[in-house]
Length: 106
Image (cartoon, rainbow, N blue to C red):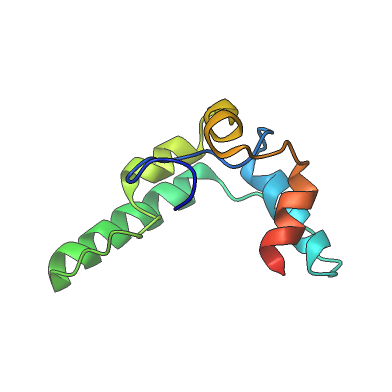
């Protein structure tokens, strides 16, 4: 790693978006015309709890499991983050969300 510290974490987006808007940008970036729908939080809570039970039963917890109760609760909140640390320490330029997603898709 040329810049940044080992073990450090960085927010790489300079904008705050809802999960719905991120999904819309992803659909646009891949060139599809698909309507993004919103699901009730109760459905996500049930899926998160079910995923936790399955993980516990099979004894296999992966570090990248996103759909667990703790993450589901964050999905339903309006939480904002800042990319100032990445801009300062990594010299990362500000980019629009559409640019970031398009770059990610490539």
